[in-house]
Structure formats: C-alpha cells, structure tokens
Length: 91
Image 1 (cartoon, rainbow, N blue to C red):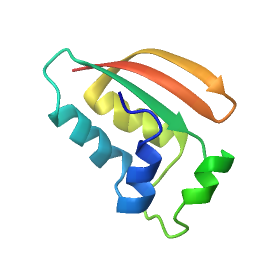
Image 2: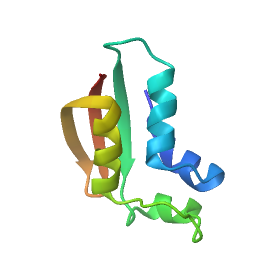
Image 3: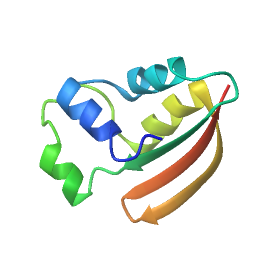
Image 4: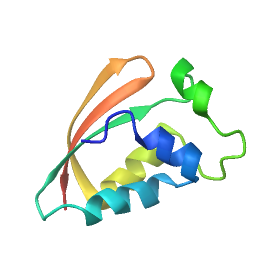
C-alpha cells in the first residue's frame, strides 16, 4: 500500500512518478497488487508540502502513464475531488 506517501517522495526527495513506481515495482513479486493514491495539485494538504522547484511533471496523466508502464490498473475510485485511489496489478 502506498497511501499518502508518494507526494512526500516527490517533494522531499525530488523523485519522479516513474522512479517511485519503479521502486514499488522492484519490491514486489510478479502478479502482486499495489494500492496507491494520487493526490492532485489543488489539494490543500499537498500544497503545504509542495516543492515549488520540483523538476518533474506531476499531472494525473503523468501519474497514470508512469503507473501503466509497470502495472495494470484494475480499479480507480475518486475518493475526494483531488484524490484518486488506484488498485493495480504488477505486470
């Protein structure tokens, strides 16, 4: 599970979606599942930690593109207007 963590990895460590998802991918066995949350740019909590000099793309499209390079999206649920929960399977 990667809930409420990727935005910290992005803005505290300057990691791209691609690097973060490669890391999660490397930790799991084939066919494993990932539960991950995307937090949109307009989320107030996200704005508190956002690094204004973050050098990587951070849109929903960028996130989904990186996710689909390593995982098959099984389901996504909009849990808040700026937060989406994904269930994905490692490919």
